[in-house]
Length: 317
Ligand code: TRP
Ligand code: CA
Ligand code: ZN
Image (tube, rainbow, N blue to C red):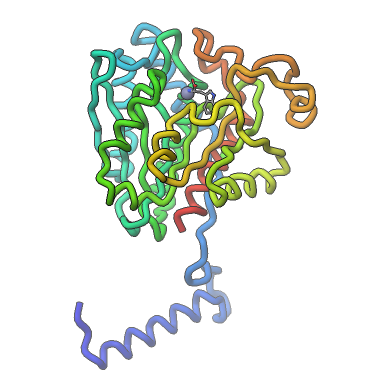
């Protein structure tokens, strides 16, 4: 709308009145955030994250016990996530690819609005191995990213940056889906991604709290959150480049992420600071048939989901 000069003065007065309200100078006015204030990240309800895991378990059970690339359980998982996002107002895109002679799919969900020249992404792989349902690896990351995306919609959060969420296919075949996504971005669109946050195994039953040692600003954001909880973290060293952040990092995108441990053993020092069992794997069911809904530590899942939301909010404002 083009305003006449006199109209501009009216708009200025209206803005001043709103500012007066926002600063709480009028008695009885409800507290409102300062103009430009960073909206507080929500506490992600872990029960909601677990409800998604229950659905992914049911999908596996109904589809031969897994959600692996090229199997019916994978596409059913993708359809479940997509339906939730569509209902919440996301613009969703399915990207199809072929690997080992079977069709695979990525799901990408864009939250309308924000500066598309600065895109913050969060993602996780949605496929399991064929041995089992893959509830910790990687229903946990997939469900937490989904619930964070739904929380953005519930909060009506409209950050400065544009938000995009991704669920990758065929990670277990060597990060095939995420590499396909990155390779098919134009260089201009790749340059628009200001950060990629990865979540692969975040509810391990004998958990550790590992933060990827990568982009310093992303790493600090996660560490700050855990410091606020009073939970010590360690730098993730189990497998740099072993998940979907690797293709983004190789393309020059700043990356970070969280991990609660796979087949490595928890040391005595780690058990002393985090609890759990020393001399036992972080996840004894890694890549096996017992990676079911019983293979989740609720506290780890809750803390990591809340840290995910905190990072999405903080890094996109
Ligand atoms: N899906 C990964 C894999 O099978 C899980 C994993 C193992 C991982 N070690 C990791 C993920 C370290 C992130 C960081 O290899
Ligand atoms: Ca929570
Ligand atoms: Zn994984």
